[in-house]
Length: 255
Image (cartoon, rainbow, N blue to C red):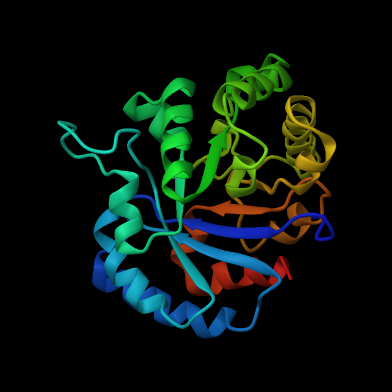
């Protein structure tokens, strides 16, 4: 982490877990464990049906609430989708876009990720933009090429001002839900690639101010070592975010 130039962000991605009552209970357990720990932003990205309960449970705490996806249209015949305006009105501050599971199972592409990102930013949301390579790409030695291409496509048309409300989460697809984790060196290298691309697209100041998270099975056991790397500015946490003790320990590691 480089706290001198950028904000550390620890975000939980609950995925398809937790009913509204369970969400409220977990947040009530977590809140006192992270109270006063303000050297990083703490975000929980919850299922749509949990948003209201989560926002009420987090009121008066240092926990911010986010959503896990958003559509790129303002309204229309898009059954099952949620617009940025809808999220804003219920009080959401952050939204995850382009998670590998959305890309793998639900047809997300770099084009739709870019459109969703623009729509979210236009509505005033902060975006956690996910990208990362498949196992085949890692094994073939083309991680840098894949990550660079995704960064360029996903940020296409965004301004330097837009990037002030964007966090990029590097999440190697081979480390999502598998228990595998990139080594701290691998995570730092990939996050460094993203930062270099941003510098080339914009400028050094913009790149140095950009928060880049690691999002591949970070947990309470490996967080401290991963977060010690200069290009890793936080984590997008999956399974460990469903346990208050584990998530609080990751927040502690970011302090």
